[in-house]
Length: 306
Image (tube, rainbow, N blue to C red; front, top):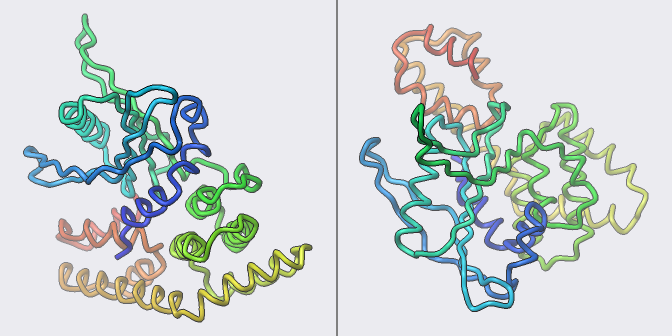
């Protein structure tokens, strides 16, 4: 399975200031850039759900020109959750209780579906009285247009375009634009590897898409940029990562299909074909949902709704 939280945490911790500059430039007016310290993850137990959660990224930063500090809490949410706003408030309350510092909460919604606007607040109110109105900043990637980030000289833009709103026919073009932007940033090899790996994880091209990618690559006018993009894609393939990822995806699909056959006693060919065509994120979601399936109709309804 793809460890979405780890990938996003690695990206944001490596390019923390660049992330803030890209999405929240107003914070940069009062943040001391050299003051960032990442704190250990905090683990919370949800007694009502019987589950444990841990914060993704918690940074302590200093107010510019002052001796006081505040926290920036960045949470990546890779799956839709109707109760997430309540969980986000619980994070806030417990972090505030422990550190007694102002907290700037940010959520990255990185799932592909649904595309409706995600909630950005948690409220407790009565007909005559509002007790609580907790707000947090939201970046919902599937509602962002990747074209708006094409000319942003920012490594986070180069990576996150791969998870934004992309039409199926645009996938080869978007991958090329991610790598083209990366090639112009002049980063060290380790950071280049981090971003190119992130892009390839979320934009794995089929054979036909790879051919379209090559055609798009041929249209780049700058010989230098073209050569650097070619070097990026070549070195990635030489390390065997693409092949390994494809094999991992295939293994995961086969595992889910086997589980469905065991759970439902039988899996018609047309339903098996539909499962094989699902994006990896939906395969992962199906792997969790099938635990509640009892009959073939449950699978059919899940496929319709997802």
